[in-house]
Length: 216
Image (tube, helix red, strand yellow):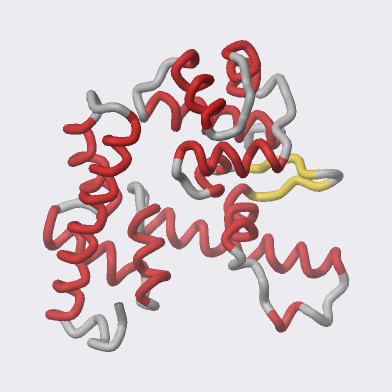
């Protein structure tokens, strides 16, 4: 039996806690950091948000993304369904909406109900294919594939040939070495690692003639 749909605040709160813990920050440290970025949350308010006990406004979400230097989609990461208004939506569809990838011109002539049904059908099919082909972490691989205009399969298979794992997994593995640094230094080092790995991967894609020389 599939688990019941979660609320947006529960999904966002769980991911907020994940992001904070990945950065090695306590709730007190995070509250101080958020205040510097314009989000005046106490430790108690942060704790309630992480537990899904308080609503998170769009203004809060924007400032959280800025404070943690992370895409909005990271706060809605995961699988399953979420209750949005009177409907239950796949998290993958919500992530596509945030990335602006849900728009399909051929659906413009459909009514709202039919359009939602078709979008849900398409995202479910894509999710099944992606899960079968790439059960591992592929967030960075997906972003690079979209940037370069190449199939995700080209990026992940090439990454495996270099590191025996995906770009995302290699980046995260190398970033562990910086876990004791202050947050800004960790973010800077993570960025350096990502850029270096991306350049290496792009060079290999070109060597294999999977990427045109004109694409960067």
